[in-house]
Length: 186
Image (cartoon, rainbow, N blue to C red; front, side, top):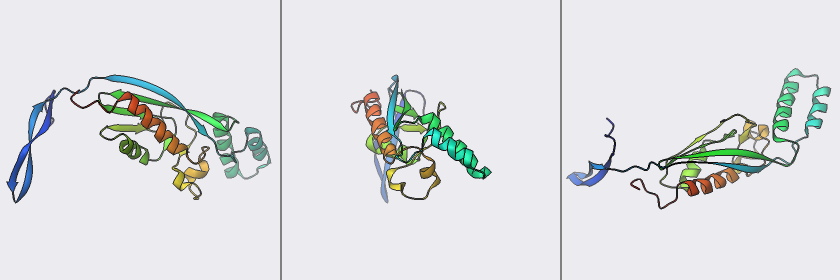
């Protein structure tokens, strides 16, 4: 049921049938063949109360509860991955395939990431891949859910606002990869 290569459906008018019905006809198309790639390194703030690796190791040494000790070991692994500083750099890869954009990052953003990007860069097919290329350290919850007792919030090393910073950085990068003047027939 797919159209032949080099064609698209174009509006061919309306037919009255109790209500106007659109008529679609096959028309020639010249899809974009542009390929481009970009990587951005986004510096994200870490939670202010994130303990250092040394503090977590002291907690592990003093812990006799095997479940809590496992949580602390995981927390130590996250802290080692992001470092003992106040920020951490997260790579984001973006690929333009025609007029569509595919982006990937190592952490786990909420599904709303794609919808927010599509709203900021309308008319673009955008797909986002979580947990890509290794190096995952946690979730990127939206600011609105911080302060709630959610696993995604307390597990994440990232401060409130990092999800929104990622959306803004990706929207800018997508705008540079696929300028607004580009159309499906360009």
